[in-house]
Image (cartoon, rainbow, N blue to C red; front, side, top):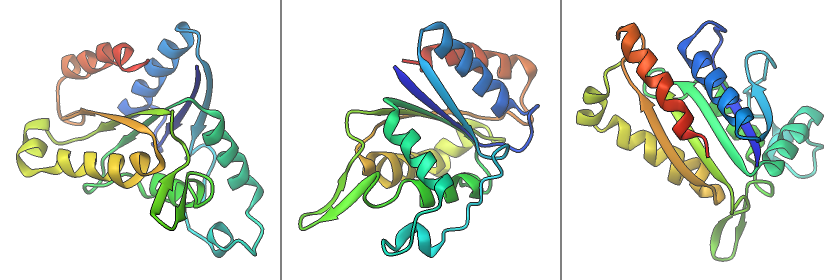
Length: 187
C-alpha cells in the first residue's frame, strides 16, 4: 500500500507527533510504502495564491510536488490537533493549495466530482477537551462533516475519523491507551 502521512504540529515532542511516530512504525511493519509530509518542518506556506487557482498562472513547483504525492497515495493518514474548533491553519492552507480543482476534484455540468476515488483516509484529531464535551456540543459531528463531506469525501476519498480527547490535561495512562489504539487504525 502507498501510504501518505500528513502531520501538522509545530512541537516535535507533542502527543500528535507520538501518534504520528506510532502510526509510521505500524505502517512500516505492515509493509506499506510510506511518504510523510511534515508541514511545519517543510515550512509550508498556507496562504492561498492566485497561482494556486488560476490556470493561466504557473503552479509553484512545491505545490506540484505535493499534488504528485496525493495522487501517488492509496491511503492517507492525517494527524493534527484541534485548535479553536478547527484544524491548524497550516493544514487548512495545505488543503486549499494542494487539493485543487483538476487535481483532487473537478467541476462539471452535474456539479463537483472527486478525482481521488478508490483511496482511503484516516484522520486522527487530538483535542485538549474531553471527548464527552465535544460529543455533547456537536463538535465531533462538525469535524466529521468538515473532514468527510467537506474535504476528503468531496474528493472521492473514503474517510474514517478518530478522536483522541483530553490529551493536554488527561492522564499519562489515557495517552498511553490512545497510543495502544493506533495500530488498529492502520489498514
